Image (cartoon, rainbow, N blue to C red; front, side, top):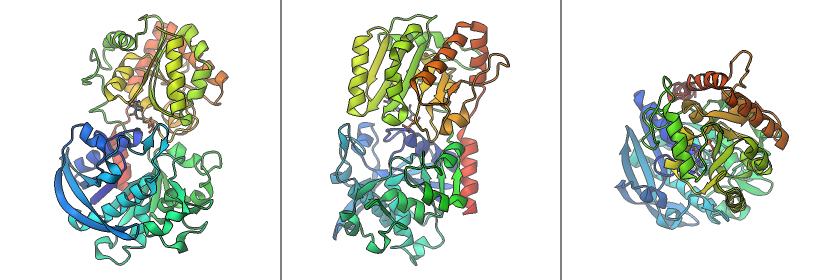
Length: 476
Ligand code: ADP
């Protein structure tokens, strides 16, 4: 099959969260199975900063947007068996961030991502005919709409199938309706049964309505989003498409996330001998200026600093955490939380370490050096760090929600089964309780050792997730 994966972020070129990891690993896994796989993303400033130099593939391709002709360049980089196409349009993408600054979204995101969609479709005659368009999140939501309307009857789009994968229901790409005609969207579609959402244009609705199938990144989340609690106002629409809605849990790219070969960590180790982890903990404590103590658990987080991640609960119970443990966090996001965590680091010097930035190398050090990894998310479509943590023998403490609930089983000291600690309610008390349980087991060396063995025995390779995507593509 010819498969085109459309994702606004792709590791290692440009990443803000888990979507990039998925869009980096899934295409390679599909290509290994013999398919022709291409990926398309904007040519952000970050791609250049990360040191990638794609070559010019086609100059001055034209498209119509905003009632005028616009030009862009199509760039290409061949990477691990996958063709990575970049849309070069500097006025839209040559900016410091991908979607917005810590103060808020870029004002012209509707145009930036409508342009992205149009540019990809305008490039198909150069890229080649595709069988599957695999769109990801709202930024690619107009692709299915344009395919099913503007390109209807075009031989390049005969028999193509579109899958729309939702990595997060809460980010829907909502814009004032004034932009509708400028993006070449017919007013006929601007109804509650179409792309209108409370008088705004919804890119996410366009993706859900015009795709042949919809998927989310875990089975649990695919069920949760049918409820008003998690559906973010689109549960009714999703219910109407329930028979086309799938859940496929993300995999882990073990060529990147594996302590046996990880180039960022102080000492390599593997499931047969975890002794190297002590050295990694020392190294991590040093990086965050925490007083190293082998007998005191070091609890860590790596996260976008957004409400979704339950970080307010962590702030609330910090005093409790510090009674029995030390804490480090690598995070970046809302200005409010950037500042709150910086404040905590000052207040609890030597006990709380905070790094407010995006830092891939440091994220690996944390996975290797921490004893426990905290994910108290309010909702979590899949979550990757709990799966990375398992591989690094870092025990996940998670809220029982979405993909976290699917991948983590509560440790039972009597049966010695389970690979982490789970709590149900998004409350200070429930989170504190789960951390206390984890610390209690940590103090019992034998039990803790058994738990670590359970963790490293879990495998979530892309091999099996890619197989499930292929099956879904074929069924379309
Ligand atoms: P989400 O996609 O909602 O952000 P996931 O758990 O699915 O959450 O994926 C987050 C990914 O982003 C992980 O690979 C995590 O290590 C990474 N990440 C998040 N914040 C940072 C940061 N500040 N620095 C480095 N990596 C980060």
